[in-house]
Figure 1 (spheres, rainbow, N blue to C red):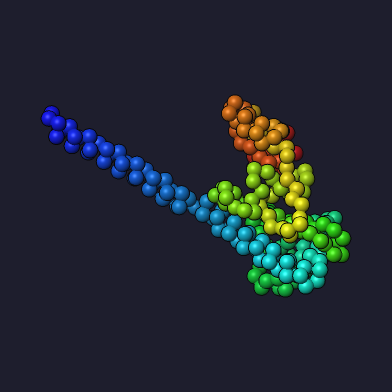
Figure 2: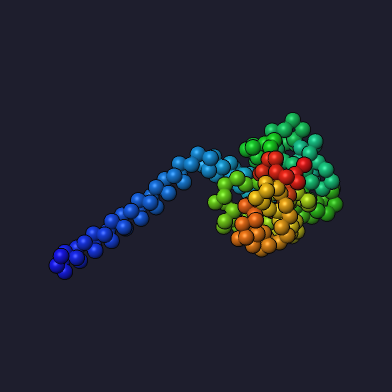
Length: 227
């Protein structure tokens, strides 16, 4: 084979490799776009984010007008209220009228399995800060969302069963500092800090990391050490 033929063969091989790489990327992209489970999860998360963004805007307007954030009885449905926390779902029979905040339905799209959690601080009659927590389903949202709890679970101890939030500027966010591992013995076990859990994954002891025991047991039904 002369030099020109060798050069043409090399170019042809390079072109084939580039075409294969492009086709592979396209196939991966199409599969991702056509994944019905992920698409449903993204749609639900979009609704959750819209709901919480509406509440955040309206709660700040309420505070500017009244000098307090809404009381639990003005936002959360009655049967869910405990201490300074309650759940929000405007379709519940015992929910207060939320039309002041929005004419849209404010409720987690997977209620009653998931609910928005409203937590206040300060006097119950005149809250001075608040946080609204939500669960998310689609993995893509957690990577770069400014309201993401990061690798930590957030919410009320000890469950920390949420991973997305909106809050007043002065709110203190409660996050988990004790992570759990679903291990190769199908158990939910404490692995300490997030870094320790990552090391356990490298050592092939841990399969999946969760921000709390609650989240691990919920995601892994029948796991050992779960209620």
